[in-house]
Length: 276
Image 1 (cartoon, rainbow, N blue to C red):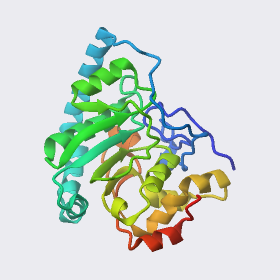
Image 2: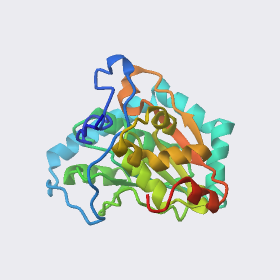
Image 3: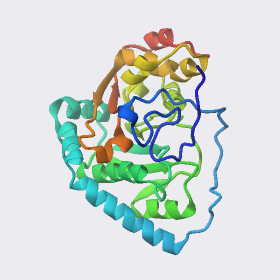
């Protein structure tokens, strides 16, 4: 069957999106497929001026969100996972001789309009405060307004001016923070880094690759969008996070840490043809 595309600014949900906000028994989302991609180019939001009143309100919303997350059982559980030997060793392998991971957030959505993007951003900010190995946080979403961008910058983030379509090359250790992005963005990220030395420098925080593999259906659009995701499953170590409470289910359901350990480059070329 065909894929239905939903606006990515919705409340942290996926686009071919199940579950809905009501969660409907927590049915798992189908892979999210995006329409035709555009070339990389500088972007400008339609909302070009900072609204001081909205800025003040949004800053308060973010402060509330950060405090709520910081004192939650969900965040305590997440920290325990990050500090556990099995996961912390994976981060050390990615860092190698470097001291910090650069973090790039794609598809965050509207932090002004929805709670789920605020929760996701709060986790990134809290991680930077907690761990000295988290470096600068870069953010991009084409829907971000000038007001939202100003608040992101006040929180110490850098708002990117170019839509990279998630094709950032990991020339240094990188954490791609991409919960609930479209499948094609994960595919783009993998394609841009489809060589052993780059994949080994990447940590991905995003939709479970295992779930994609379980849910791939006989639909050409979905198969194309998930081709590298499925191929990468063969050398991916995945650690699912626990949402712990319903408060954080919409923002973080079916989200995992992914670490990549490919063997040799010749094996990668066999897994996916270069023209794909």
